[in-house]
Image 1 (tube, rainbow, N blue to C red):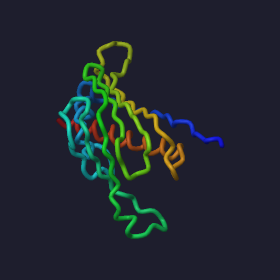
Image 2 (tube, one colour):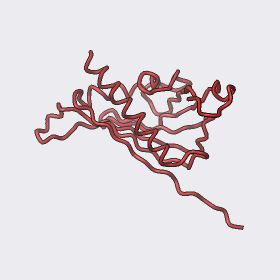
Image 3 (tube, one colour):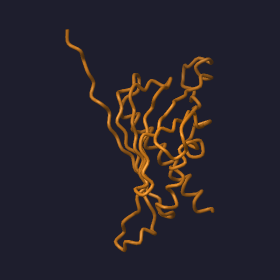
Image 4 (cartoon, helix red, strand yellow):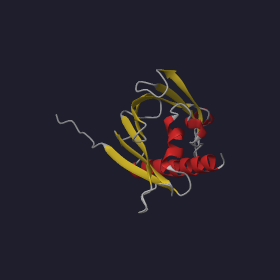
Length: 171
């Protein structure tokens, strides 16, 4: 009897922000328990345990389910949730990694890294914007093709980046 194993999914999305610097954007990501400020369909995000800004911090995120064609009313009202653990944070490198611990969205294994980097435009001052990179490695998600998941990550990051850019520049 042979056991079929599917390869891990890996992906990466990047957004470029032309106004704010990496140092201005990093506090938005570093604030691990306020994801609802930046991502569409995140209704709540709150600390479950651990110390803010430290590895081991666990957050719970609740998501709105987007009704799909042919879905039943009870499916539309179902709350999608995930408990996520901060496994690494490095403020000097402006990056963090987290993993999904528990969820009802179909994830078996998911680890993501988010990094904010200055745009290197040749003059070295880093004052001409930044990029945010969101990379992940995950087990395949049942009923969700990798292309669709990559598209979701990319569109979420584009939305997040524009929202952070507006927030930082309006301060």
